[in-house]
Length: 267
Length: 111
Image 1 (cartoon, helix red, strand yellow):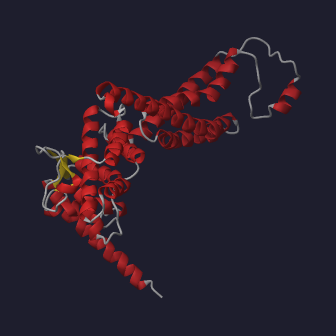
Image 2 (cartoon, one colour):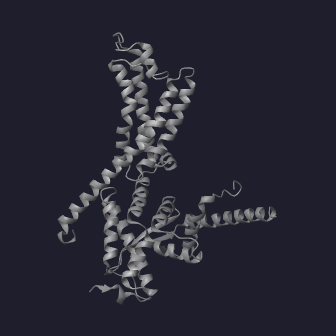
Image 3 (cartoon, rainbow over the protein chains, first blue to last red):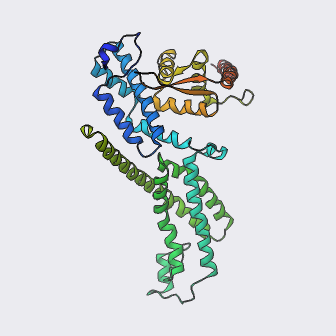
């Protein structure tokens, strides 16, 4: 027979499966929902169980202190922390501990992942630049304006515009790629994806600026580093955040469907 | 700090290890007792304590054991490993040296 918290809350009695308060049930379901799909189900079960143990203990302590069940439940939940934040911490921890290599332990798995994705994109761009250098456009530059007029709009060190696939590729790539990279990061990094992009990009930016300085007096290298700083970094972080948000929303919906399928009364 | 090998951010981990010296404890009990022992100056929530325990577990200083008791909620009991027992003594020694050194500096630089 299930006992209620009121009857079970004596100091000597062990913590048991009490009839849970609605506040606790909602809280635990919220934590469970936010973990769903982002970590393994076994880990999720353990973490939700541990969370339940904490809040139930917290509630029992409040009951022993003389609070009513309703207030005790609210206090326990409040003390345990916002469900979204708790879940975020748990997901991050589970993700970071998913691998055990000295390098990733040092930099952090999420930071390493984001850094690797952006560094790979950088490397790809350097290869594209080789195409631009060794396979230049053979057609003459045709623009409706004179070079002087064009240069007044696109001053040095901006590249002189051309209507060739090589030009469009080398200019379009750095403008569009942070959207894709941020999106990928948001999907593969389950917690704090934007922060991971920010941290992962720091070494990429530093190396881009170092390379830019080495290429002086040609300023294209520094221009590319600046593009990464003012365009890749904010766009990458924002897109990663949005992508992560969409992933979570999809997981929460999936959780809702799973609950509806197994417990129609709880929806 | 270099002489003791002490890391200033090791405080929370050290407190958790010290709590486990006497006997194994559940996460909730560690958090609650830390709060009480610090006269409520320190507060550890699940989201804060869990990563610390996990890191200690990963380092092999602490072992978490699931307890499944019929009719009760499954819970994880944390106990110090042999390595943890040796490590906590060394860390406490380092911490004591460090705090004494800071105290001496503060006393000697006072008005």
